Image (cartoon, rainbow, N blue to C red; front, side, top):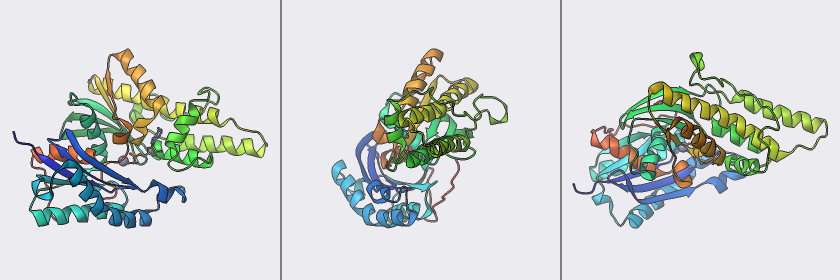
Length: 339
Ligand code: KG4
Ligand code: ZN
């Protein structure tokens, strides 16, 4: 079989990324232009600024990806793009660019769900990985358990009812004066702390009933904020490492329990971690040890493929390409796209 090249774009939040992937599994280029330094001074992503930055960066990033992959637009077989979920103005930059390329080059256009892209990052990192498995997607915007029955058959088992895990990390980090995005800073601080120092709540901790595979992190977020506020009112010095470790343990506990329960429930022996929070060292370690006890295999991507990138979008697009799941030029950004 001759080589099939997918060019993909990812602009759903604060990274402008273009990638070229061969046969769905081999990364030839994965260029990521991060806007993190731009948004840092505001303590979070400013949607309007994100859109403008994407417009500035998208063409240079595509040029660089093609150069690094040693290919040209003419040699690309399909064009994939994230069309949701994400920030509408940010998504529109990628979608409009991909549509223009597809039209001008007369190549198939493939609309990709960002969440599915995160899961597919694992196919790039682990060449032997195949469905079926259970995926835990934990990012700044999502906390979802998904049964991946086949490459093109994904079933949502449950998701957060309020904040996403990454959102909780970022909000707690912000009040602890860590720079945006705070997840990695909490992860680091927690390494010096005692995870049992403070008993923070674990919502929907037992995997049964109607909230079997649902999550909720807003109560935990309030509990940590209340703890910090009352300590400061009493003039107490808080041990930041202990707060970070105890908060992180509360998140990780629930994620691990539910991921294991979900794999048991659907009857698979593989668990796949995905999304920015998949880079969390405690989540990786705790899930690895729980999985080992059940004889489940655990997969997660390296950090660069955990956070937003276009290679994972190209991988997802390739499997849609194989079944002819093409979009037309009416493709639009869908900010709250569901699975
Ligand atoms: O997947 P991603 O790049 O963007 C979204 O699609 O949301 O995820 C970004 C999120 C942020 O909330 C960030 O704080 C979190 O991933 N994150 C982490 C770690 N690295 C990134 N959270 C906890 N521990 C980490 N090591
Ligand atoms: Zn993401």
